[in-house]
Image 1 (cartoon, one colour):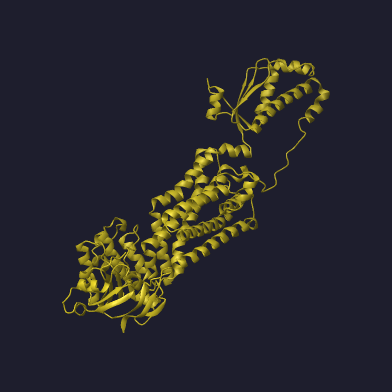
Image 2: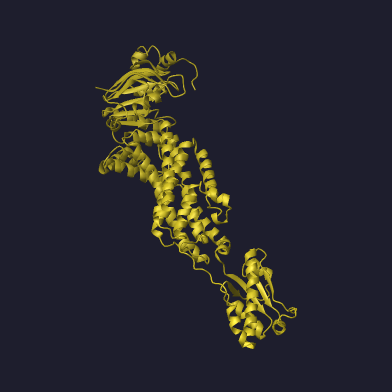
Length: 243
Length: 397
């Protein structure tokens, strides 16, 4: 069974004529590391929101492990690392992790163990009891990811998780994601950094204006290396500036 | 069980966020305590003049004659006057400015002689030049000026009656009867309408601060909406009910703690600094019920403002301004008993008025539950209306 099956998904935001999703169809196999590549306003975050059950599509269908997004069973198996730093700044890192771990349904002993593991994974052990408002941008990004993986979801949705971080934090995030993927988790990763998609993703979906313009592995998209991924991306999405 | 754990976790989160917000704590706890402390002491005289003050008065007599002593004794027996000594060299103006005395009464030398002559002549000749002179604090209420004048006149008349009774025993029954033509009717239970300073300031400023919960509450709602934490919460298997309950319950708790602490300030702190006390009335166990209803109203209003505002700045400005307006209308800033009738009628538009009147019902009027119940129902209804509108707004955002 595929982890994600999306068929002809359409969504128009109220008051906007242009659809945010305009017939998106894609599937992601279990254990896959898939990338959603697209310029600003392409529809990546909207698609993520539909997969999380935060938005209902106007038409079409989405299934995660064969079930509707937003159902309790799906929520338990899904982790979202949002583009915004969705953290409680006046709480400590440990308090943030404890809160979201409880909401995910982790029991006390398991929660304690997982918090220790995630703090280790994100390099935040020494800062676990500091308030997040005193963290650097990179530390906040790592915590943002740590919360998403805390309950060991089968499907991890990552919405531009490395925006504005230094190379050290970026490397730590990449290493963590690769380990999670090797451990069996399915990852969907949105970005507009070509090198990130090339390095991390086995399957890439190029999205623009609410449509999937191309998909496949790196070799098939670049014609076996005849053109760079960035060149192919610009061919597909054009050179016009996006707001 | 899982839902309870989730709600508890959200409750703890919200409480920690709130308790780490120093500005919110100043606003919710320090502001009302300061208002209660200073306004109770500053407005003590204003309230006391309405409820029956004991006026501090300097009484100086230069005449040691028998009649002057009788007049002085009659004045000193008046329970409404408290006699104080003038500090050496202190002028009357300085006494009034410092608040040591509100009036100075002086009995001149030879007053007894003039009064005796007046009695002996049976009023056939006008009173001599040695009259009692009195001077009042320029800001003293006209009613109290009249009262001082009447007290002096009464003291002199009683001295005359006593003198007449002694010299003409057959007039004694008339003189004795002339003292006692009226008697004050006993006050019916629960008929007080004017509170003491603390009975007004403690519930008034507590309610004001309880409604100010709108500022941190709407800030928290809007911040969660803006920074994405609310969206993140929604991706977890948590019901909306648990999110709302975990969000609002800490503010309800804070509201209740606010009132309890302000009650403590009124009962134990302010009396240490001034001659004031807070009487709770005959049914103080009604206070928790009123406080819970007021807390529901304040929290509901906070949720409504959060749902209407788009930014923290909007919520802060609108929330704070609207509460100040409700407090002005509702008799928190200007007590209802000094308002003209029109303003008293308008006061019932403010939920702070319903809360304040319910507290005053308990403190002053010894009201049974059925009397305060409509006010409690009004507060709860206001809360429900706010929450329903807020829920509809949040759903559509």
